[in-house]
Image 1 (cartoon, rainbow, N blue to C red):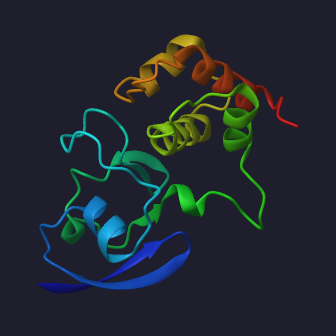
Image 2 (image 1 turned 90 degrees about the vertical axis):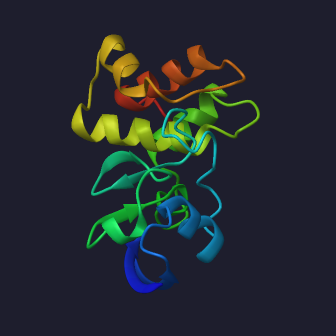
Length: 155
């Protein structure tokens, strides 16, 4: 067991965990940040996606002992001052979710994409979102939401 100070959602949080315990487990079980979901446990579905220094990363594969001084953002940390980000608003506007299980990972992956490529082509969106699985099949609405956010068309 070790004690770690993690920089999560603009806060420094202290947690005691085994260094090899996944960041996902620490987020959900120790810190009660349950917006990040467990899906496959193998980094293939995207439900556990968080931002590590702004880059979409699979928290189920990241041991907490390897996080270091990384700035971690979960879905709970996106909104600022009670306002949704353009990506979150676009997902709402387009109805880009059905059951909602994949939504936090989809949103964080889209945020990462748009920070790196503010006006992506459809091919860039497909490549970036590849590996985020929506079992409800709302991919056309997800694509529309990312396009909307990129074009600044949110209300």
